[in-house]
Length: 443
Image (cartoon, rainbow, N blue to C red):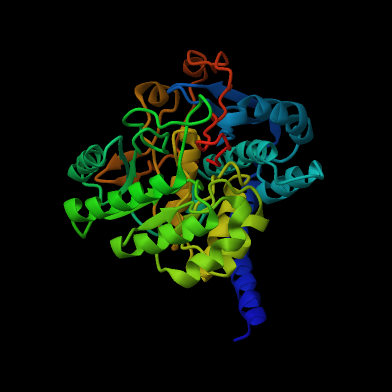
């Protein structure tokens, strides 16, 4: 079959799946009209900001004109959090008031196109907050969990992984053993490099010499350290534990190829972000030279970034951040697209995704057949107080509750007890990391 025919079949298959989903949602709308019940309209759109664990979370609340009918969506963009609220309240809110709350696809398209310039992280997060809130409302209207609206469960629970780290290799392995003892089969491993600022682990030893006073990083040493970690982990943890590692786009393209080649013999579950978004044209070089599975996408905002990697099968796991790509509506379309090419999902799920966002990912994970793994960060007691209804984790699996919508609420009074902190000069942004000569390193 020619490439053009394959793409045509893919588009047709994805379109059929989406049509079936829309028809199911239309059935609920028709039944509601037949019962003489009015279609709810958007009456208010507000933003809830909180920081229960030192990370700034943004949630959008959409309220309808029907008493008690509302929904929540994740709009968390921690590094530029102060920009999301005005995007929602000054631009989207006036645009949305009075619109029907059940026309999710139409509303998403209207929001996406209304600014003319699009695919920016601030706007995408604002759209995501509204989009996910409308899906929450849709589930509450239908009196069923969102995963039922998406076609029902394709699995009983959602597999996840632990985040093991340490300044020394043995510290990282001990951290991994704790997760394994809790029943997890997948562990992400990150280790520090003596004298350097790594990713996902603390620095060990005295800071290496540099021509500046800030945090310092040296690529060659980090690459060698990562390979030593893989070797030790495979030897000490055995052949059956699935190992993951995040390169965090810190290497040059040729070093990324080398890292993937050397990692091949240690049979990683995946190696994440070997390249930066600016270097995605290098992925064919990696694919031609190694079978190491690749995960990519947490920094993507635009279909122009993920589409070529999926359609050319250059990655094994799509790893987008749901609110950065605009919410559940685009994410489910991309998941259907990836299914045709056997590219699985591994949505970005650290602590700077709100609990509402995590619930959205869990509902999507439960309903798709090309699910791979779900990153999840356990929330503290304050977050659980603010967001009752979080998924339960048992033996490395996430279990959603069966309440309507996302199955999660937001206690706004509790959220107000944990306001944003703005006294840090970075105001939530990433700090600078430089090579010994002073050059900035992507991170």
